[in-house]
Image 1 (tube, rainbow, N blue to C red):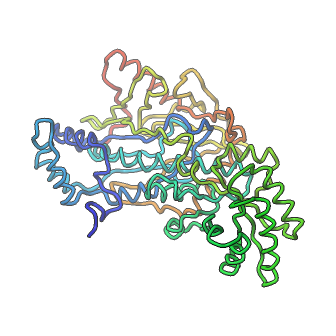
Image 2 (image 1 turned 30 degrees about the vertical axis):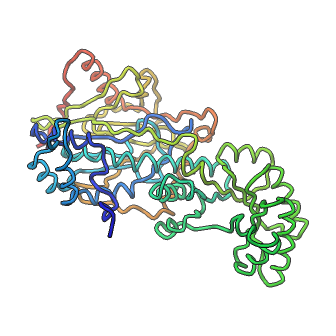
Amino acid sequence: MQPRGSQKKYSVLLTDLYELTMAYGYWKSGVQEREAVFHLFFRQNPFGGGYSVCCGLADAIDYLLGFRLDDEEVAYLSAVNGNDGRPLFEPAFLDYLRELRFGCDVHAIPEGTVVFPHEPLVRVRGPILQAQLLETALLNIINFQTLIATKAARVCRATRGEPVLEFGLRRAQGVDGAMAASRAAYIGGCAATSNVLAGMRFGIPVRGTHAHSWVMCFDSEEESFEAYAAAMPNNCVFLVDTYDTLEGVRTAVRVGRRLRERGHELVGVRLDSGDLAYLSIEARRILDEGGFPKAVIVASNDLDEQIIASLKQQGARIAVWGVGTKLVTAFDQPAMGGVYKLAAVRDRGGRWRNSIKLSEQPIKMSNPGVQQVRRFRHGGEFVGDMIYNEAGAMAGEMVILDPVQLARSKRIPDGAAHEDLLVPIFERGALGYDNPPVAMIRERVRAQLDGFHDGVKRFVNPHEYPVGLEAGLHRLKTELIRRARRGEPGAADPASALS
């Protein structure tokens, strides 16, 4: 018998209760069909870095395709009570939810795109009740996978092109977290995963050798290596640090010679503890002197981009990097600060009434309008991103103004090529987008990163890539801030009236 609620990958009930109480409020107020626009974005790059890698759209699409409540879920909601012990939702509202079908327009930045603070990664436009209900699940999906893809990109950059194997399954945050992390890590640049289910489901190469328990169950290390070579002659990477690391490398050489006599080749050795810089240098010497200059040294042991960069500086002779816990848990920053904010609502005359959230912290002020992101390229390099309002008139000035420090600006070079990053995913609830295979998304990450100045990609004090508001949107935001602080209603754009 299946556990309760297990028949769907995602449920509309994968949400915070307040999304449903707001939906009920919209319905009771009779505004549930009023058109609204929400944007999903983040305010700061994770890990103190200069960029992020957008990820999670495929799962977001799966969630939206299954956006409907079944009888079991409606029955559960009917049993949720308020503080007075009475049902929180009336039966007519639950009937409305049972018949509800997803009908929003969704635009999103494709997975594998390098993105920056304040840029909308997802734009949802449609009936406000529906758009509101999407908030929690979209944030859950996009936040985590963007975080892990970004971490993987940083780790892979630290190895300077040497392959990274994602080894995090046993330390990941639950089964769902492990699967999402394996996919996101591969998109971010990892060459393979130890997670066999992720390999099958997503088409990711899988890699793995043996554990210390294999060595310990034999009478000697050499006997264990011989048995493994007999069983897996085409996959011989020996874990050499069960007892004495460098003696283990010498043992691997002896077994490797016998393996070669049988027509196979020693692939390499794995170091999983100790001074990896020193041990890899010595292991490389032993392998070379033993006649195995092509055998690789694989290293693991709680690695991340900072440790890898340090090992490279120390001259470590590691060729393949196994990274687990600190990658799949984003160990040094275990959450992405993505948010989902209302930016505009249709008034009764068909015009957009722009919305803005104020704060005592300027970074937490939202941007209004129906936003799009335009990325400019000049001289073979990305030079700046402009956030503009599709529902308003552009000022025509090739200037972007910082959304937080409103006095900062940058002029876009004349003749710069551009592309708009948000692309159509759903139109009135109908899917019109084919998410590419993960290998193509992974290649997009590489190509995207190659387009940015190295200063944006460094780990310490990275250069701040220019992202700003188009001049007309900047003026609109400034006016809305002024009105809000004076208690006046939000601005309606007269150019946006539609039937």
